[in-house]
Image (cartoon, rainbow, N blue to C red; front, side, top):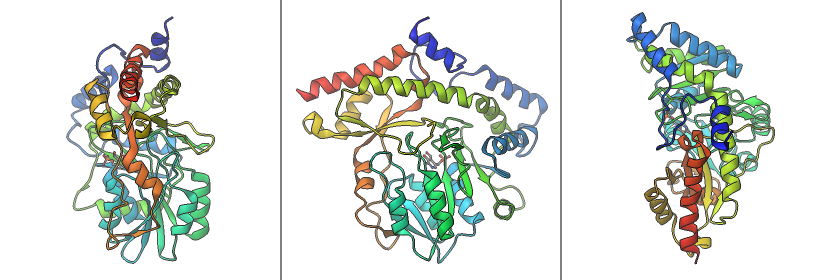
Length: 379
Ligand SMILES: Cc1ncc(COP(=O)(O)O)c(C=O)c1O
């Protein structure tokens, strides 16, 4: 059996063919789910058999008492803060490098963001920086797992408990990952998932809150109630998520095998410094695979130039988040210069996940493209 065939079978993939990596992948079971929701006549509804089943399965998988399905991960973070009664007068700790919507979610509930630095190695919140940023007004910490990195949840949880702070754990980029022995999303008082179009589990749009406490669940539900469920995930969306959920772990394993292979092949290229996962006992999930781009190793050729060149080779690579280091003091409290967040915003490059489910000959094309640029620019 060839290496490429083996990767495909290990991943439990429906069809793995050569050709551009697409997402979502063609999946007969998703098609059947769509047909079945159509036949049941339920596809116009917000609640029903499929959303109930999805909520139940997500609760089981994450060991949480309650699940609220909603219209996006962005909104789920805001709802989480509302459910935890975070509001005016409260501070919320956020990484200086994170998804921009998380900053807006804090502002949307009337609280004040406190920006703290990340680890230079994994793009996740630094425990030390969180501890430094905490004041008596701090009510919550938003902890995101980014670019295949996983935050050190055991220690962050212990710190939050010690200081009486809540955690909103943003697992939008880490569905199905295990962090220090527990699934991502289950460490927070509220965990958050995204089912956006590009995500590992996709319904085109959508999100979920994984909630531990009944009163928090009740508040989220009351907030969503406007004479109707105002921010729903529909039955149609829930139906397509169920078969994907069943395949998540095998696909995560296939993606991880590809990442290990790619990292090995790319080890010699000093201009791409892989992000390293700092947390122990982890099984990462790769929505994006991240590197820090070191322009000095390529005679000063900029990240923008590199991304243009690699995209011209047909590789789905892009830059990371802009981060918040330039946000004015009127909108947040910043803990120092946040050098790691600044650097992450300037140097992160990300490979989008669909190629990670492709056979090894297609992964080789990514390696070849990177090598081509590296060899041409390093001389
Ligand atoms: C870390 C993180 N949080 C939240 C979100 C928002 O999810 P959505 O696109 O479903 O609103 C994203 C989206 O990329 C994300 O990467």
